[in-house]
Length: 444
Image 1 (cartoon, rainbow, N blue to C red):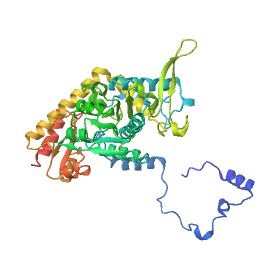
Image 2 (image 1 turned 60 degrees about the horizontal axis):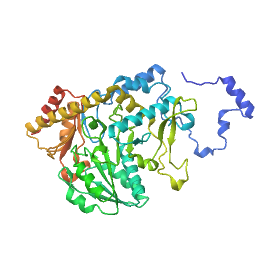
Image 3 (image 1 turned 180 degrees about the vertical axis):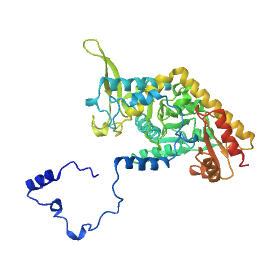
Image 4 (image 1 turned 30 degrees about the horizontal axis):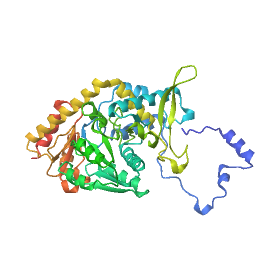
């Protein structure tokens, strides 16, 4: 049955009011030679019941994280999302595809953002946090711009061990302003400190480091901090928020700005997005912070209230004075991170980090025991890379057993191929890890 909201009599009445006889008369201005003179090549209509069955059949052809054992890494991780996160997210007060601008913001939304900012400050150890960025890559790029504006220098040092896609975003953001981006080479799985020291000079605004880095290895961040601060530049650290359950917060090793991707904090796997980027900094950098900050205040009656305190963007101030043209935050994803962190708490986050660490190292030891060679031998958190004979063959072999691992390293570092990245979160059981090893073990 066609769904036509108007009856034939209503259609005739509307056409009559327009002085027309048929619906085709509405398109009289279109030349006849360009009109389609045959029916569209579409199947016949279906009932609602038939459409539901058809779509369910199509959907069943998709894979999902629920149907596969996931050991995928490189920036998107299969951490557990407590049910309460989506339960609160789907409340009508919060659930909107549109960013909540000031005029539309309720005290509840403002408070949720304030709580988010507070938690990110506690995680990173830094003084202020904005109301979220698009993702980890854009947050890192904005941090680079902020460092350039703060130091009035025009050179950024990016470690070659940072996620290649993050580095690409940084280069895109800095291309327009003419900022020089130099990659500091790696030595094995981490930065080459001697080369880094040679590259840092009086024009260096900041060193950008990822901790743990793209390979899962832990960088010598305290030494990097000492080197850049000796030249009065800034240290920008892109961190895995889950790792902060057991690793030092960036402020403790001298990071001036800390950024990262919040997908691991209560946001599920979803074809690469949407994510959220978090951005924290020292208090004296507040006026150069991109995006906006929500603050806590009291009204004239002494009641507690939340307000948008600072938003130095082009929409609110003179364009040339704007810190950034970023226009939307990821409020709903930031809310998921807030609910997640409030749910798991400090002890829970530490437990998640510990389990991820221990299970990753168990998987690593099992694979080494089967004859695999590690690509790098430094300390790592929840992710590591092993050499394989053929990336595509081992990936397909795992896929046949409903196991997802990777990506292959050749996509980003061809000179290190063939090798496979493996990430292990708290969700994986010992039996699941043993299954991974059993399947991969047949490769050698």
